[in-house]
Amino acid sequence: MGHVSSKLRNKVAKVRSMIKILKEISTDFEYALNRASDSPGIPRSNPTEPYWLDDPPYPELTNIQSRQRLPDFVDVAIIGSGIAGASIARSLLHERRRRGIDLDKKVVVFEARDLCSGATGRNGGHIKPSPYDTFAQLSTFMPKDRAAALTRFQASHVDYLIELCREERIDIAEAREVETVDFFVDEEMFHDAVGDVEESRKWLPEVQVFEWEKEDVLQQFGVNEGVVGAISQRAGTIWAYRFVVSIWKQLLEEFPSQLIIQTNTPVTYISAGPSAPGFPFAVQTPSGVILARHVIHATNAFASELVPGLRRKITGARAHMSSQRPGDVFPETWGQRSWSVIYPGGFDYVTQRPSEIDGDVPGDILLGGGFAGRPRVVSTRWACTMTARTPRPWRRRTYQASSPPFSIPTGARGRAEEGLDGDPGHDGGPVAIGRSS
Image (cartoon, rainbow, N blue to C red; front, top):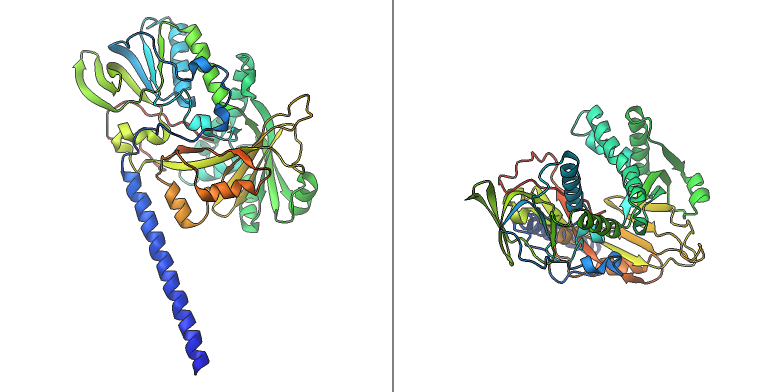
């Protein structure tokens, strides 16, 4: 009888423990959802220091500000100086020049911190469309021909960015083609991924993707027995910060009278209304108010601060990466390969910079991911734009990869709700969401 009572008490204790865990999880996720409805604020003034921002190629641009008083009226105000903001400014200014119009109108770029120090300056350097996975995801909520067209557009970024760096001689961006390999540690996930590859081939026959069974993976890539299969494809890598600041450098030289960049000047509020004929937006900053004809938000995870209608539609998520030296047994690929480890709930990724000193010194490795994990860890990163510290689980995780890391920055990336209808419920101008990795 005592033995039965003991077993019963153990079961009751386990049930109580499970109930407690479920309550904690529910509370944590409710807290995360509530945060998603709150204002994300403006970028913190004391963020972690990213590896990519060390030794900037153009230090004079890091905290650039106009030496003259900002104009009272501007044609376009762009908020954000990352890859989205730079792309918008470049396209706008080049198109004006090509058409010979609006050559006297000002474009002002506002950046809350140093130039390109947000998500673009903190990502892992991947140019990785993953066509088989992208096509599978898009196909769940749109026709397959449309999914194929969007996937093809994403895949074109590999060639476009590499070619742009070549044409503009932005060698410091280290843009290059790589072979990328997705390692799977779960049999079911690998089987599903192979199915996605086969389906994508029907709609994207020009995209080359290769499947590797377990025995071939071990021999080809030197991984351990934990890998059950792999998928490899063509991708690219880039030093995104150096690429973007090089674009800004060129634009300032080409359009000195049209382009103004104002760093460390956050936009705190935008009021829409008849401020002045033809200039409906009053852009408020610590430096004063500017009236703008157009306002473009290139603010990623912080978009809903100035466009409240986007709250719970674009949500910040704190992501992480580390930079470190490769260990003695790390494979030497001369910067021509990148890797991902795919597991239930998430993935980790690794890129490597090109070798130094004629190939004798392996390049640094950049490791990111780790978003999945215990529910409490995930919920504390979701709807979060704090980048002033790195969570302890990630600090522990990086030490297991190779030599100790010398940089472990965090970054806030914007995640958009599927089916976003494009109406933010606020006429504060169009919103562009850049990618962090």
